[in-house]
Image 1 (cartoon, one colour):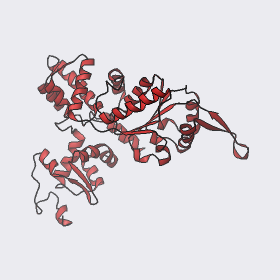
Image 2 (cartoon, rainbow, N blue to C red):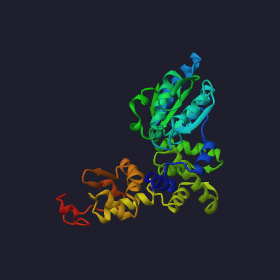
Image 3 (cartoon, rainbow, N blue to C red):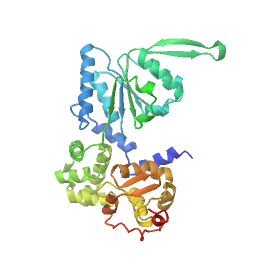
Image 4 (cartoon, one colour):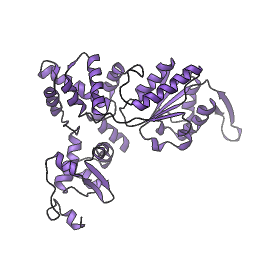
Length: 356
């Protein structure tokens, strides 16, 4: 079994997972802003990108290649579409995993129109031969198509029309420097503040024809993990609850009750997050405990705990990764209303054994 597939499947099943499922993709298409002025959040990125696009339009040239990095659900795909709209150009969308051979990339590049925007999602997962072909395409707008094999192989240069590549990645560190250096503009997408997410929620509620109060939007925003995609997903689930259990109006109490049904607490933790923390706190006295042991305790694969649950817990300051294992922070004890045991009263004696 491919562990990445397992992890992705688990992430997709979570209400607070940042990966987009089919429903998310359909709704996002309807809610997606059409220009930079309508795009909420990422103020610095918007300001810098606006300058890049305005300058390109003034010169009558295609925009520089753009690299967008950041966690899933922060708006990288939306920004790529806005870039195309601002430049008045068509957009072609593909992804790194879909390009397994250099020929796949050559076929896409050779069919581009002048000025077209090519959006390449998860660019760090592209195959190495295709990646090397992309270097020349980005810099010189040409590719060498190899015809034949062995000593008789011939390289036929193929000129490409000027285009703009928008690459998106959740792991910028995996991009090789030669590829990263060929982007004229790079931007890192930050997590959103609750106030920004409230604006996102109000905008989405307006487009979905929902009635939502200020406190209701704040309640949803506070549990959305700083991610617009999650905020919109929670809004839809709260909408369902409000339509079935109430009069359709989303208030703070309705939002809180709805998210309690879906097991999303006031900090955005879901069942998996709480299971990891509760095992760490109650079974292992707060740690340190090894990842494999912790995964067995919660009945999940270690990759699921490490890749799906831990990033948010670490970012929230609820869990720390140390050389000796995972450790719960004081904030985790406080969140569950528990008192950290003393040195001689640890849950398993593990801390005493190692002198912690």
